[in-house]
Image (cartoon, rainbow, N blue to C red; front, top):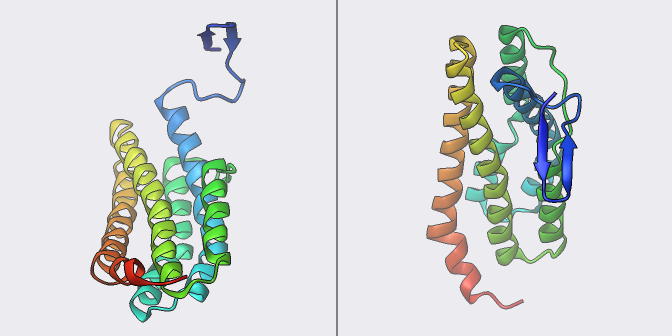
Length: 179
């Protein structure tokens, strides 16, 4: 068991804490599995609140999370890990914040807010997929690394699409919108 020293004293790590890179990799996969399952249920709300057809099209790419869930299940299988979801408090917080943005029901500002919220989700995914991809390579899990890399590239493309819509459409409209 790892011991962590804090100013207030010595704290023992939890028994389920990751002890090595493989353990951290498994914890990260379970976290990501939870994220993808949660997003597959909540992203359709963003699509329903969007008014721009370009944004709806791009968000529909976000809602294809079942494909990501299936890919992660293949990752688990290939790595010999049981596919369990570990609740991701970070994503729960991001989605709660996103719901607040959508409750405001401001059409143009709402679309800019939805892009803002969507990019928070994408950036979390990019960071997590990227880190897990690097771990898989270090652990010699080449098939797993390839599966993670494919999803990572999809995440980056979707984020780039959201950025393009924001820069060349929604953000400009939002600067002149009256609430």
